[in-house]
Length: 293
Image (cartoon, rainbow, N blue to C red; front, side, top):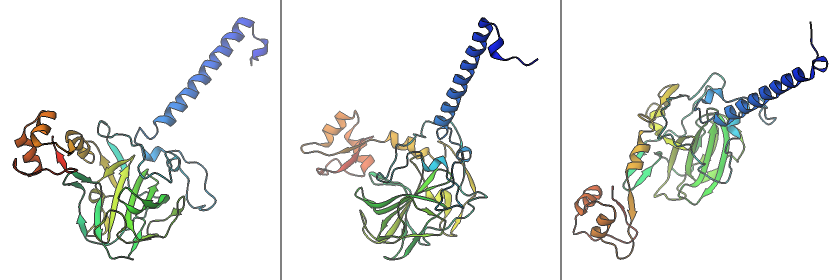
């Protein structure tokens, strides 16, 4: 027999309505929490599909192109992966977006890692001014403008797995923000804008704001991906984050000495000298960055 709530006794009606309300509230809460945890769960292949943009009907718009989408700021608020215990299974290409293209076929002149007191978050590829730089994967241009933080003319492109790639020191832009492009599309011309001592392409790979060594992803000698999929963790890909947190640097101010810095950071002059490759008799300069831990 089908029951209609209108014909139930008052107390039973109240119970049914109350339970229905609790069910809807719980369902809404679970849905909201799931959406908020979507990127934090670090499962790019589970990102929900949304509407198809009319400008590119063969592309599927993902939530990845709405989360933290900013055309004015280079770096977004990152999710710190140095403390995560999860292993992130990253697919660099898939059946819908299967293509990869070298950003530029040039010799690697500088690698990912520490460069004196500064961390180098990408690789530098040798090129000549005016050489064409290409999109590495399918995606959408999030940033294309001059950056005063050292990148010079910079293109930041977000891809369908949530990864972003950076192309810096360009002499000219060939794409604009919010434009959809395919792997292999010319996006700029090589140059030496920003903090640069000569023409080269500074290329970065980032996920949720955290830099990834491009040489773990791409074989720059063969021009191919090292693998189609990668398992990333704090013990492998993001190990450097713990290293960086363990290091401490100090910018020298007027009147400071090695002895004063040793006392301030509870270390010794010999330890500071050893970390920086200097002698205790060397004169430290105002503005000099010294590693103190």
